Length: 235
Image (cartoon, rainbow, N blue to C red; front, side, top):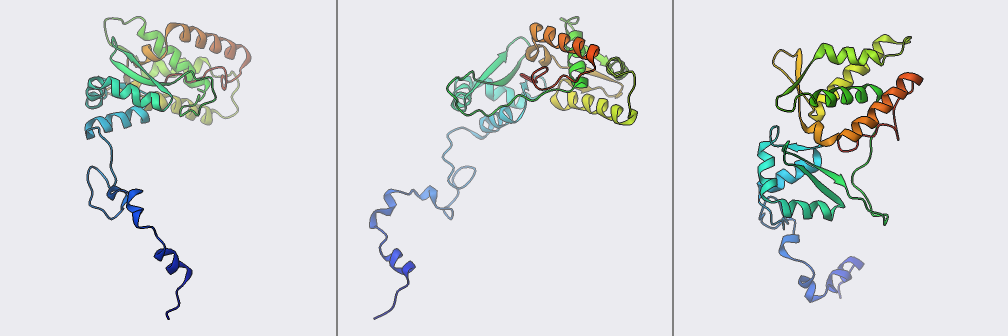
């Protein structure tokens, strides 16, 4: 008689119908079908990649992301359904050819993927400036010089700054953030920028007025607009 360990006994007692619970695709050593082992997705790779970028980016525009824009537009019902399954909605501005996701207004305490993150005073000042500039360029491209950005930021710099270098670095970070978001596109000379029209879709006029009010109060009290005052919203 051969002694058996508890593990051997457990293996001997494995039911014969275990295959009814598992599929060959669940085997990590199975041949890869699709893009990875166990891939049960039904979308083609181009659409998959476009939706992933929609989740990762703040927005997708035809001008900046044509390779993603086209498959998303061709498959809007699928894209909307996928976002809805994650408690999100899709916003499309057909005039400016930009789309972005928003958190759905759910009241039942469902989990959310997106969160409100506040802009700094410097970032809020730049958003107001850039959005205001697009209002005067309905039929042409809006542009802004680097010097004008610095001038605007200087208007909101306190009269007495303890650390001028730190303040200048914070202002430079605010400009870089506008570039990273995709609102500003640097020209070849690096002395001027093109303002992407996505800011018009993401910051409607009533939001612009609200941010103006935040900046007005900030300039009076030297407060920083954060938390509930200048949330990023759709950007």
